[in-house]
Image (tube, rainbow, N blue to C red; front, side, top):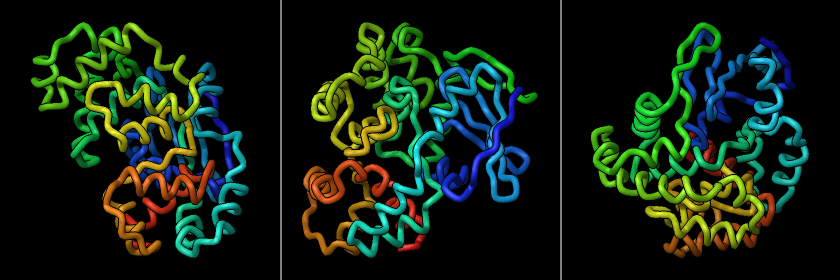
Length: 277
């Protein structure tokens, strides 16, 4: 095991994990157990710092996963000076949020399950998928299941996923798994954001909002701006918007905030949901 300490001013485990970008974590004795792909780590707050405990061989993976090489002080500074009071307030409120660098394949499957769903149910579905098709591992005295790769998911049919309680999403999971078992979601990272968005939109069940979530949380494309109910409210309440088409709302925010859009989306989402806007 190895332990690392990071300044907690711009790294809040609670904000980062609780803002809806990942579903594979839970609280543990004052900390957070976090799972990604076949790996696990433990986050804890420690007197203004964040303590990260992991297997030695996973150190680089989780440094990248939590985006720890990026200067979030600069991201916050740009957000506060972007000309929007709402963004400035949201950035100050959520300055501990970091955009995770997650496994693209895992993000595609989890956000297919996120459609018309709430976070507790999504987390339950993801956990059942891991228990059914993942491998049992142990970390810090706790058992967990790895996230199954596309080949394992593709070996099962739609009916199998219906038994897991996926409902109509079962078809999307089964069909997308067959595509991802033949292509590499990791290699899609070489595409430009518009090209990658179009690629994602060809996957069964992936619409504009889910595509933008995958772009942001699976490929760190911060020029993507997912729009859900909370961002619709932000658009109306804080920007005086009248448009109701979410794709056009997303385009408005993308034009306005450019490459910082993804960070700003998370600050606005989190602040609105938590009642800080």
